[in-house]
Length: 267
Image (cartoon, rainbow, N blue to C red; front, side, top):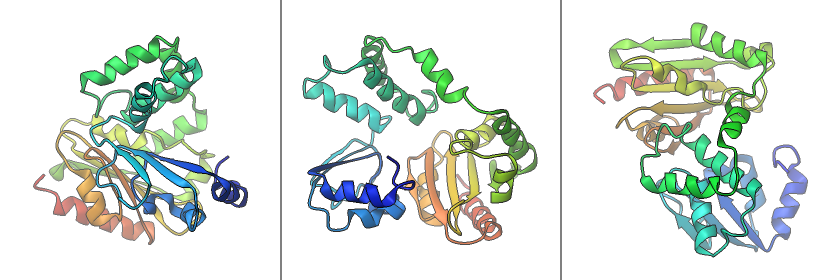
């Protein structure tokens, strides 16, 4: 059940629960509209997360491992440490692999530790088909999505060559025009990083539910887009993958992004 689709029923379930697991976020702000559902709950809370600077008041028990490639890696480790590997099903292993794969861009970043590939070996022993999983995640879009990507890259991406940065913008009207579905922008912010020498990309997308702009940042090497997200976009995240939001029109968001690029030009 998705909270945004059935908020009343989801809130009731949260309040009836004896135990609540909170995965892949480190602070109350990441709950967005769902934050109100957590007010006054009596259930014990367990947080598993790999983001920096977790809020120590978010959970009764916190497993925070910032060096992990993904929260799915942490979940696998917890299962294994509790002796649950033998009982892990093939479908469960597929879910864990999917989480690790998507959070590392197909293991192209934040995935240099040897232990990650040892975990993949253990998941493969459960019979998962990693190639099929990849196709289902990354090669499963509509023709409208392919046209949408081409449009954004060719018409809505501005390159700031002197500062080795790029800004892409997406409006509600454009999403409607290309029959946008949830997830159609997945991975789009990474594509300009294929340009030689580019260091950071800022994606600005109008929220479909409220007057706000969703911000995604991606970078390479040691460029700290998490610092940029915290300073300019009310957000945070990882060094090379961060996000945030801005409560004003897209035009003003572009100006804010340009200020961010200028401020971080030495990096």
